[in-house]
Length: 513
Ligand SMILES: Nc1ncnc2c1ncn2[C@@H]1O[C@H](COP(=O)(O)OP(=O)(O)OP(=O)(O)O)[C@@H](O)[C@H]1O
Ligand SMILES: O=c1[nH]c(=O)c2[nH+]cn([C@@H]3O[C@H](COP(=O)(O)O)[C@@H](O)[C@H]3O)c2[nH]1
Ligand SMILES: NC(=O)CC[C@H](N)C(=O)O
Ligand SMILES: [Mg+2]
Image: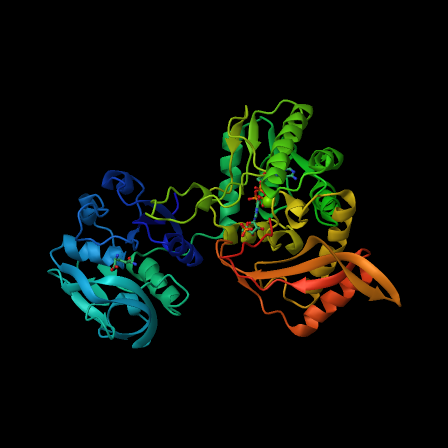
């Protein structure tokens, strides 16, 4: 069993970030609901417990409370923000509504240089706060080990019980030395080694896959995206020829996508690859359709049809593998007023129905995206695949505004190829979340070689984002924009104008449809 740290989630928007930071310290961590019974936690034998932040106030009725028995497990506990307030309140301290919210940067002054949380750190640290409540009386047995401008209890400690609390957020990037604080907690206080690496994960995962699958056959839908590609490489390592990958060409792929997938997986890895060219069917069904949601629905439905027919041809298999990641399965605590309402019928497009007649193999379901990338590189997948930018399931169809026709696909594909090339050459491709071209259905007048043109417009989009939920447009250098514009207009027939999208999300979205 892995050494692990358990994080109880009280609804903080940063809970997953805490888990990732711990794993970056080469320690396995999992997130559980705040009310998970202490017995269940004890059975997992964690080396330490972290109580996350959360939007509630500990003194209000109905505020989320942990099973009180967690305080008697005898393992180190670190409370962050709401977590600190819980620890303090439970052990007899006092938490009240503060005079004003403390939000943003603050300076932490470490008062007790012997506190293990701040080992090897300077006396003054920049930290990031986001709270309105205030600890006004320390619980018995605790002392204050650090203060900020606004708080005498920015960090508290009960050395004997190994209980700690931080009023600020060590997990966010705005606390530059937060990583060291978390490392101090998991290594020095909880005594974890550095056992969690993608290299060691491979052996573990291979064994688990073999145990689950036995001699049965496994089918995997391979999109060429990061998740299914890494799943394919891992499964192939575990079960070799028992794996069949199905790759559907929906006619909406990028320039060399179909070739790359066949080269990398078929020729290089020698994975059994079933190539389904359904591009004509998809394009036929999209004919005349301009509504973005209808396009998505048609593509999603057609994909399932094609995939199901393909699995029948692949021969009898008991298992279907999926590249499900950890963030997909974390049962997070719903936060009141969460605005993640349905804006686009995402992320199920290209997905498969739950009720297919297979049992599931999900070898990536305990991993975060950055871990999946690292794993892919460990497994020998090319950087071109592992470090690629996200590409939406419905493909170029949501980047061709209005009707999707073979001719328009061709134009966008050529422009897109230029964008990818130039972004890579200039070094920007791997620095940002996404960069791509969008084909607008408007034509405008231009002049080329003394002749009048009346052609399409390409919009360029480049965004910076952490998770795709919010995004800022990237201020690409003018000379790069100039290069992109001149290459696209000169090389792509049918385009005589290039624009640059300077909208952030919200209120715009990343894709145009
Ligand atoms: N063109 C395709 N051919 C075969 N399978 C596909 C295709 N597109 C999607 N899939 C399958 O459907 C799953 C869900 O697709 P989706 O694009 O929504 O997921 P994803 O998280 O982007 O995964 P990936 O990074 O593997 O693309 C993929 O992981 C893959 O197994
Ligand atoms: O797998 C996917 N299937 C989809 O249907 C889909 N739609 C958008 N995206 C990607 O999601 C992120 C956010 O996109 P939006 O701001 O356009 O909603 C961006 O990274 C988009 O590229 C999709 N990914
Ligand atoms: N970020 C948090 O955990 C906030 C805790 C609590 N709701 C406060 O405002 O103080
Ligand atoms: Mg995908």
